[in-house]
Image 1 (cartoon, rainbow, N blue to C red):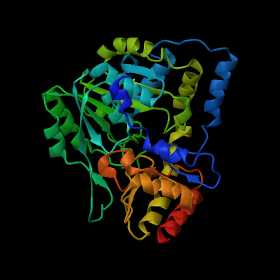
Image 2 (cartoon, rainbow, N blue to C red):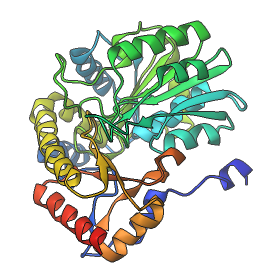
Image 3 (spheres, helix red, strand yellow):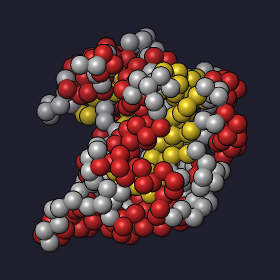
Image 4 (cartoon, rainbow, N blue to C red):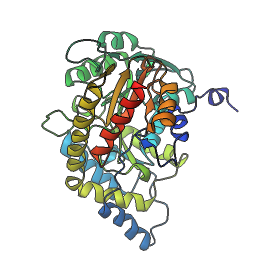
Length: 389
């Protein structure tokens, strides 16, 4: 086997979850998904497709109807985006891997902003790239204590003419950190100078709790031209409650799209037709899903974070975007050990911070996407009793 594959670390999130999956006494908040089932009308669209016998291959780039629906949806929130820039993928993680396969050669330098979902730093390594990480830093004092921030000078210094690709996830999993429009513009201007591609993971853009005119977090699509060296990744998973469907999309320069179709052929061939039919309906009826999801997640955030802030020794700030509370618990410096102990001793399932980067050691991620906010309060109660013991 390739040494790079043998050297990949197993997911620490899965390591914790595997210790508690199937236990009815555990409150699980470890995975990045809501516990709410996909809306019935989305599920029914897939059922109807299957009943019609749509069980065959589709176009590599996705069904034309879905590509156009995505283009229309994106254009409603950003500058006009044509269907020729869209590729449908088998999930957001597949979209990320395709983009990295498309752009990165062995030995290329890739810079990633961390902490971040571990797939984003593993994928360049799989492609035998040279990975460099620019860490966010926690704010340790003032009103923003517990939030994470980017040193822009450090990032721009790290991205040089030798950097093939810059990977950014904002709103960020796990920290909730989000770029400002001005920061995005500075990054774009710099990358134009260095010739660096930007891969922007924006799957949480609709899960944003600050007031905006377009109902989204700031996007690189709003400060670039169609021909800029930018690839944006999206997914149906989060804002449409469709994690298990494995359906996502890419936005890229139109000149890339044909070759992306070839690459999809050699990865998955295509997304399944019945899931694409579900995606079309999800986009057509987005106003029945996403605004309600976002409003409920804001309630979840505003329930959980004050309860955590009231605990002695907890450092946490409300996330501007995403679905996570990222917090530090004083006296518990090994995230993985702490997370495993919480499962066994408190019946509480959280993700360890060091799953996302070494600088997040000692932190824990709590996914607050829960149908019942009382479950969040019950979880905090378990954490409080465990911490006192």
